[in-house]
Length: 545
Image (tube, rainbow, N blue to C red; front, side, top):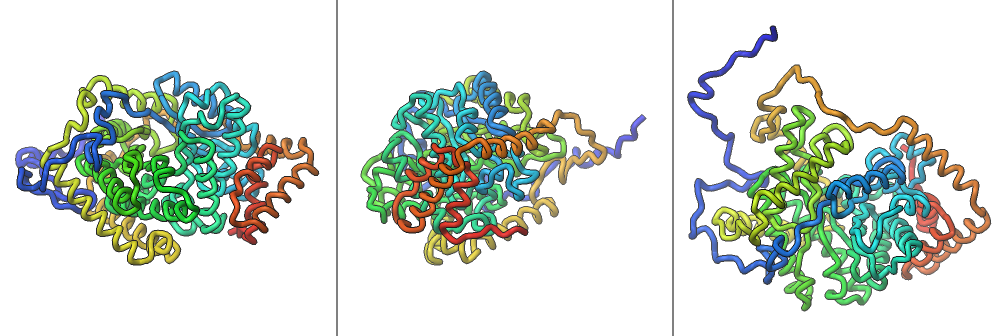
């Protein structure tokens, strides 16, 4: 018989207490809040500054979009997963690409070895994109393409050409190209953002994509700044929002410098935020984001269109609170995070699956994540009225407190020269590292509790869940595919379109590069070949480590 550890009866007799009463952002919570804690009642949902939601009826009119991770392995495998998840209740796509794709490398590149198709779908050719979206009507399903520039330009070109083959006009496309040069890999870390392509040209090409999409696809979101990846680096909610908004301001200024009017593009900018485990703070954070963005657009940039004032937020529940220990606890955590996202008034939710402490989610875990959203939507009653927590003294006070702290940090960043200057000087990375250290320290010292990690540990725990595993020959097949693909093309034609792209970038650096990239993709140049051409045009070399 297994020996059970000593039961500490005094613990139950005396009662348990929290280690402290601070939020994850360090806000000290009062014993209780009352009317004196809030300056005034918030405005109604759907009215400036949209604290209580961007629409008057919120989820009464339409539920949020349910999205899940829809990319792994080969494009064909990802296509099968997309169809499966849509059949189970997913209503929008989050298409993530593997690391080689996000670094502009074909599967047969030496630096891609071992990473092909592991954390997203491998994407190298126009045929890959066609396979990925086979049977998916691009004018009826909203797709979020999770990729950074300059490779976002290549992926967007592939997407446009596939839509054309489907007979879908570019003006009918609905979805988002995330398209941020800094936040698409592991948050705003300097090395990941600059090692494979120079930063300033990447931002220039991001703006090319935005400008082209505005001209041809008025329903398409041109930029989705990714505070979720910033938050997953270990920062708190204040830093997450301040960093993301200061970065968004950099893109806005560059589009304005191109002569574009703020009301033409502001409604097509969105955010992909994290929702952590601090339930009340995360609800208040989403409300804070809407309020700050509304004032920023109206008061700072002079936007006149109310749609420009609306901060539209997609979220993914945070992975940081999820544990490899006692993984079924993650089902509870993800449900609480999802509820916070809904009560906070977001427009799209990706519920992180409980098994992602180990690997990409299994189909079983992804279905459970979809069901989590559906239970909240249809069974809990929280969608029957807009912003049901509006007017809560605690929520309103937290919203005010977060707003003040975010604005103060944004002011610090602006006085240091803006986000890009802070990024280039690696001040941002210093903040990330300090936050990571502090997060780890709190876990080590028990200030931050994670059940199964530093409380209620089970030293002899046995793993009892299924783990997602790639097919053993997936990477070999992808490498063989891309080599055969390159051999089967007209080499003279490929050289001609790549030379044309090179000369265009080299000699007309201020023009929009997307038409030339579209031509290269249409003539079967690969993502890696186009990326290498762009690197050569900027005299940039990727150094092997």
